[in-house]
Image: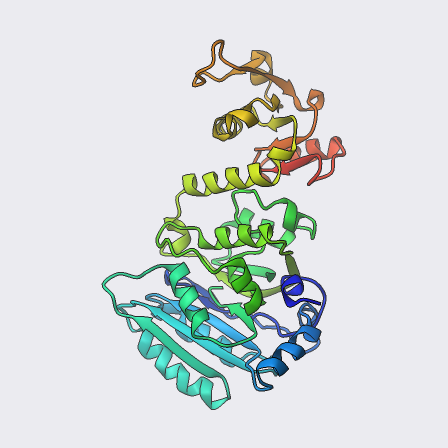
Length: 383
């Protein structure tokens, strides 16, 4: 079987992703105990694909390259690199670090751990630059990949993924529940939500061949959602998504994380374009579930062609329903488009749902379940 077809989630055998990440923004993923040789994660990747590739380029080929972009990460590096040292994977590992113009003590910490890691047989590759400004997460990840040689890449910024534990525990509680509780089907149906990739970047594990096939990380720098763009391109090229239902990663939340530099409007635009590409162009009509701010915003974001496909908004708010119509005042058409507002029980699928999950004490989810619809066919979440 071709490696690119199996590296993101079809059954096979190979090493698990490691648990630690220092992003190019200085965010950290602290250690969690990783699986032993009996872990189901070891069954996720195709060992039958590894042997021919290894023979073709040498039996001593490194199996796993841990990819570690670093920018001003001294607060978390000791904890991160200790977790690499403590991995229980018995195959060959190398650590590829790229220092993205750090101005703190990061490089000295890395050099200290290089000695310790190489004493136990983990080769450490260190690259970087000393420009006045960092080049960004995508740039650092790509350079760390370039200087590495492993068959598989573990992004210690870090598409097999896993469940996570958040630090601090109270940070982004709804987001963490979403990460950990998606069903296998929802890993591919909920790719349009505002949360981002359904398997979060700090847990990604893929083959080098697939990484090159998808096309590397976007190097737009600060404000670029490089993980979301890579994830969408992965989906475009037929990649699958899989999550191991074990908590293998402590996912650190802090104000300096690069994710905070990405504007909500930027993410919205990419999501709307991908929704159009993957779903809306194939529908002849649909209903937007939410006649409020988010639903109207989605309508205004649509192309004129897709706006004409919107047959109704639906809601549970009596005031909105009694109003009867949403008038698109910004339209250049005359008369202005008027879209009916219906109770959700009177509306027709398919739906694009703009209601936030896990915020109504289960009432929205109960209403949706009443309709007995199939996610990915009758509706998609865009919340």
